[in-house]
Structure formats: C-alpha cells, structure tokens
Image 1 (cartoon, helix red, strand yellow):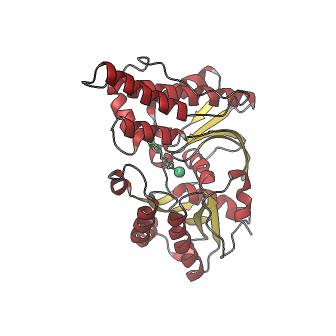
Image 2: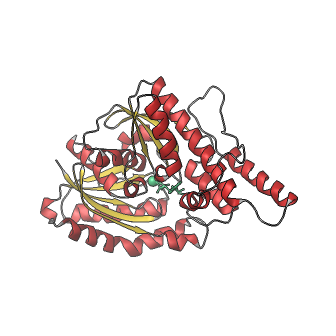
Image 3: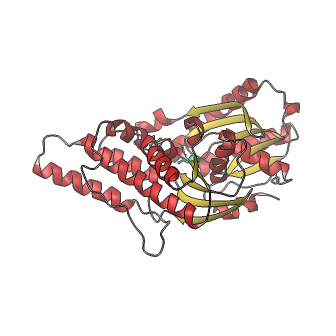
Length: 342
Ligand code: KG4
Ligand code: ZN
C-alpha cells in the first residue's frame, strides 16, 4: 500500500495530493480559472507562470494536511504527459526536486490514466476490465481498461473534445468560461427538444465522436434567429438543446460500445462527467442494459492530483518507476504510457 505525494500541473489547476493506495489523505487544488476567465480560455504562458507562483504553497499545504512526514512517503508522482508543456514542466521540476531531496522514487503519470484512476478512488473495490468514457476539455475517448496499465482506445473524437465544444458554444452564447458549468446553468428550465442539432456520426467508426459540426450548427442557428428576430436569443432553449445533444451522443455511443465489448462496468471521468444531464441520461440507459455505471464525485472529475497519486501508487507497487531525467511531453498516446517507466 504505497503512500504517494502527487503533483498535477498539466493545464490550469495547480494540484498536489497525498494518497495511500486508494484513499485520499490530502487533496489541494488551486484553480487558475478566474485568471483565465478574462481571456475566455486558458492562456498557456499565463498558466505556467501561475503554476510557478502556486506550486510551493500547494506542496506545503498538501503535506501539512496529510499529517504525515517525508519518511512516510514512498514516492513522488507527477503528470508527465500530455498537457501544456510549460505548465507540465513546473510540476515535473518540483517533483524531481522533491524526489532528489528526500531520496524517493519518481513516477511519471499519463494524465488520462490519472483520470481513469479517479474511479478507483471513488470505488476502491473496482477492478479491471471495464470501459471508460473520458470526457474533458482536451479529450473525448472510449478506453478499454483491460488491466492495470493496459489500455486500448476504441473510440475518440475526430475534432473537438466534448469539453471544448461546451467551452466554444458557451463563448458563442456569451456565457463565460469554463463553458460546461455555464451552459449547464443556462440550460436550466430550457426545452431540450426546441432545436434539432446533429450528433456527428462517423461512418464505419460507431464509437468515434465529432463535435465541430454541432458547434457550427449552434452558430448557424444563432445567426438565423438573429436575422429573424434580432431582439433576444432564446439562450435557455439553445443551451438545453445543445447540452441534450452532446449528452445523448456520449451516452448512446458509450453504452453501445460497452455492450459490443461485453463490459459490465462503465466508468465516466473527466471534467464533462460533472454534467448532470449526461449523468442522468447515462444512468438511465445503463440501467436499461444492466450495465453498472460509476461517476466519481465532482471534485475528482475535474483535474486533481489525487487521481495522479492513485495511478502512481499502482505503478510503484508494480515496480514501475521513472528515471530522474524523465522528459515532460505535450503529447503522448495513453496506449504508450509504459514509455514513462525506466
Ligand atoms: O478534466 P478537466 O478539468 O480538464 C482537462 O483535462 O481538460 O475538464 C475541463 C472541461 C472544460 O472544458 C469544462 O467546460 C468541462 O470540463 N466541464 C463541464 C462541466 N464542468 C466542467 N462540461 C459540462 N458540464 C459541466 N458541469
Ligand atoms: Zn484533465
């Protein structure tokens, strides 16, 4: 049962946690959302600078909250890929420094594997195999978790990620950033069948997604409504119809995929998993098909370091550690995450 101090700085949260196997001893998340909101999205250079300012406080707080000493910590885990390179480098430098200072093994973790592991924190008895729907700001994938560290991507987005579509449509409707929660709020009480929007089907790839057409359809719709009646856009109904379309697309394709691969458990992770429409539609469809569906709590759905710590603890207990010259990478396929280990 290794105890891990973990660092996550791949995007716009400076996060540090201490995790013992599948239980969270501390979980500090310092969000930069307010800084980036004024730009309407994450500015990579600003993100890196904010990580530099926050990282030492986050480490000190997570260490204090855990009520452990460095002696109790067995390894330092860090998000090594994928992500914004300047942001990743801040976490990597901090992790290497701690690993050297306290003579602990370094464990580089793939960010998406971290998201998958948030399910183990939510459900400590969960074991592979299962299907994972990973829906965040940068990724929308269906991943078969065949075993620990053994992943097969069976569906992916061909263009925008689901969270990216939420963010872009929110910007279009002038609802602010981050778009997911803003659309969810705006859609409350709206008529989700007011507008018929495209689900972005891809021929011969039943589990792939495409959300850029949906985003363009919302743009055309707003232009058309503006031409006909330039007074006020029916934002509530547009937001509700968009949210329903994206949730319905994700839910139907995930359940179909779980049935095709004979998976009895479907795990839903990433920032978009916080969406209550997606949760309701998926739960319903999964129940109808005798599939167990697991949603980690909201705090574990968006970026955090506890999930990275859980992945780190799995790798360390398998004897998989990284070299101290491990490089951060902006891109890395999850199927290749073994390259992070020496
Ligand atoms: O996993 P995450 O925190 O960061 C990435 O690794 O990308 O996901 C952030 C994404 C953003 O695009 C945000 O708009 C979306 O998750 N999101 C949501 C909700 N909360 C966050 N999307 C839909 N509904 C939500 N409630
Ligand atoms: Zn993420």
